[in-house]
Image 1 (cartoon, rainbow, N blue to C red):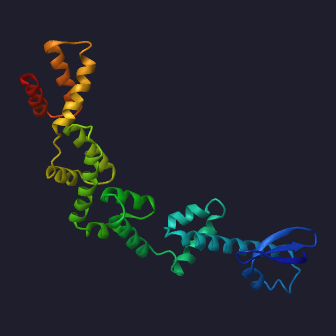
Image 2: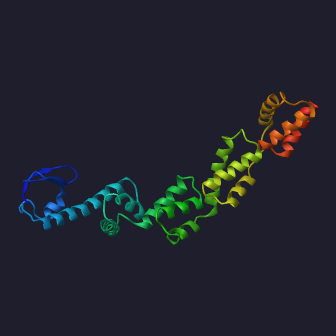
Image 3: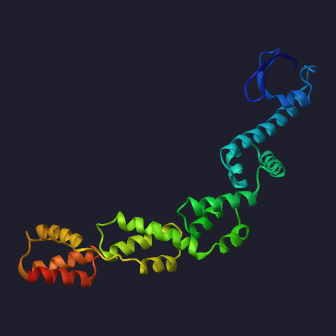
Length: 258
């Protein structure tokens, strides 16, 4: 096999054209290593060796470009490469990246926790699950997670729950608490944390909300019921909407005495 022409491409690559018209793309590292500018002829064994070496370089340089966008874990790099490269090349690439300092678990975890605490909404349970999905073992991050003071999570929860309260005016107190508990649990916060924050907040509804829901129920139910049965049905509906028993009773009593 004899090389006929070299054409410079982007990303440190050359297009190599052989006498028979076949073309391949090689990194300039390969051309230098095998001195192809001088040794333009090769046998099939050397050709296969060149292709394999180029593939290993390709995996490494692709990984570097992938890492320039954001920090990655070993598992993420493996998944990124597995569609195009053999396992031995992937493992070799990961080891090379680690030895070069581009893959570093300590740095990754430090940045990850910094982002989660200062920018993210996730609680400790969700963070733990995410890290395990990223390929870490529990012992890799347990000490970091355990050393974060509970006040950090509680402070984040206060802001999240306050936002929930402001954007969910249509719910009664029980429905609101239920929604908050569900949503915050999905974000990875412990039940005791959520309950502690809720216990210190005033989640009681105002009469305007009750009045609004009362009118909606009355308009709909008065077509089917009247008298005591109508009152019973309205009470039942309001309780189902999450208003407390005392809130509904007090409100309905005011309506009767008005």
